[in-house]
Structures are given as structure tokens and as C-alpha cells.
Amino acid sequence: QVQLVESGGGLVQAGGSLRLSCAASGVIFSINVMGWYRQAPGKQRELVADITSGGSTNYADSVKGRFTISRDNAKNMVYLQMNSLKPEDTAVYYCRLDGSNWKGVGLTYWGQGTQVTVSS
Image 1 (tube, rainbow, N blue to C red):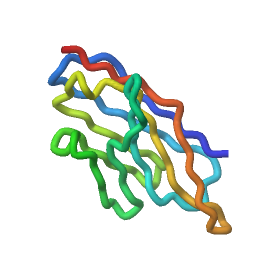
Image 2 (spheres, rainbow, N blue to C red):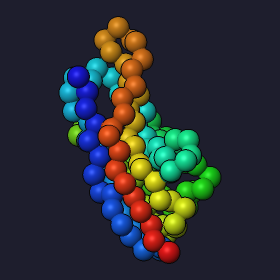
Image 3 (tube, one colour):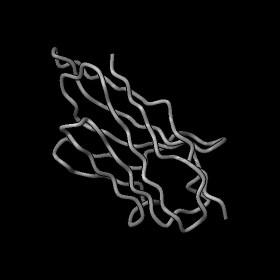
Image 4 (tube, rainbow, N blue to C red):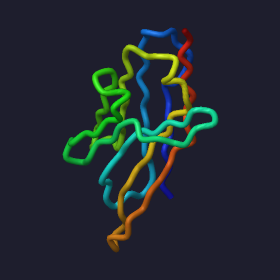
């Protein structure tokens, strides 16, 4: 069973920074994409950023230039450095892992989420 554990959320003033971490544990045959999603109250969960095993990144327009995603393949970890935070970044942030088992069947795992609150 694969588990994703996020850490690093909290309360920060607008303009501040936070760094989120996500650790994946368990038996993982192949990890393809790791990423961060967020869900604000009353809104749908949305992609923030993701990164492939080869290091290709993808960002939501709203965070480009402010957030940076990175990963450590050896440690099965993914990070999200968030700078110049805005109140509209307030949400629960979820880590997501897309991989496959030994049969090549695609699998998706989610973390429990970590709260990020940005005060104005």
C-alpha cells in the first residue's frame, strides 16, 4: 500500500513563503508524475503544479513565477516552494502520485492534505 504524507503547511502573511513536502512510502513499482493540487472552500480541486520523473514541470497560470516544484526520485519525495503568497492561495494542498504496478496498470494516490492559510 502506498502512502503519501504532506508537511509544511501553515499560516503565513501575504507576501510570505512556505515549503511543502510530500513523502511517498510503500511498494511503488514505477512513479511517473508527482504533483500538488489544492482545494479552496466551495471550489473544485485544481492542479497547482506537477513534475515528471524526468523533471519536466507544469504549473497553473495563477502560480507561475511564484511557486517551484521539485522532486527527489531517490527519496520518492516532491516539494513545493511557494513564494509571494497571496490570500487567494489559501486552500488545502494535496500531494498526488501517478504511477503503475508491475503489470503496467496505472495507479493514482493522494495524500491527506495540508492546510495553507495566507492572511492579508
